[in-house]
Image (cartoon, rainbow, N blue to C red):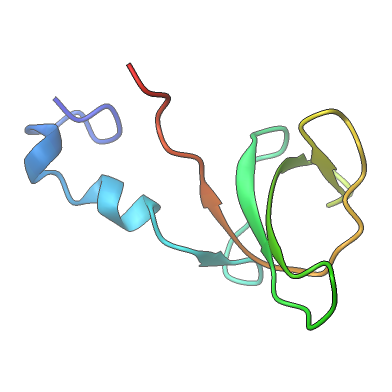
Length: 83
């Protein structure tokens, strides 16, 4: 059973596939306090992916509670942990 929609088998469920895409920050933001993968598409050394969570003021914090000062354009949920 799919843990996201609770219908059908994981292999036939399309909701997980939809959640494994990059989401534009101006389209939708992740829930506050939920760790996700963020993408910074700037042309400087900040370009790349970061793991972090946002607070209510939209500041992104890294895994070790450090502030990430980057211009994030996209995000996606983290994958399930391995078994």
